[in-house]
Length: 120
Image 1 (spheres, one colour):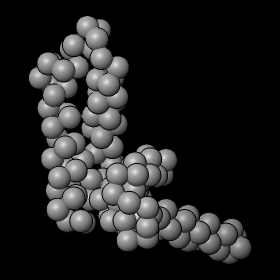
Image 2 (cartoon, helix red, strand yellow):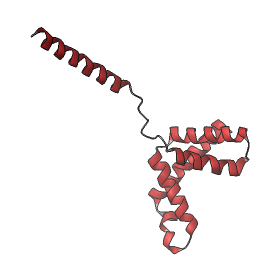
Image 3 (cartoon, rainbow, N blue to C red):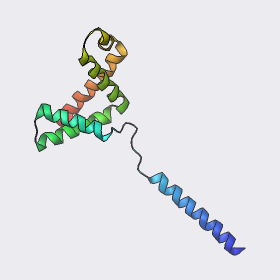
Image 4 (cartoon, helix red, strand yellow):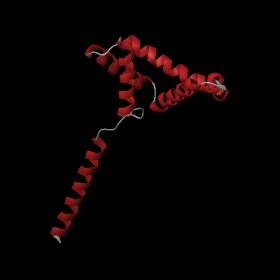
């Protein structure tokens, strides 16, 4: 009987310890950008600003600042809108005039300006 009580107590202790470990595990912020998106930004930034270590650090800082200011879903939407705009023609006219889409691009550009001020 005593062994049964000890076994139950031990199992409860292990379950409590496992729950505590799970609670302290690292949680990613909801706007954490995928590595590929960060790398794409840094590569494009370096193409524009120069290809040296100092520029690499500034570009990495810049995408980190953008990630802190803008959720990834909003960043991705704005990037998509800007990409579609480059296609040109009548079929993309909505992307140049529809207010909600324009606002998404403006928000991203504001985040980019803020990041540039902080990092460059």
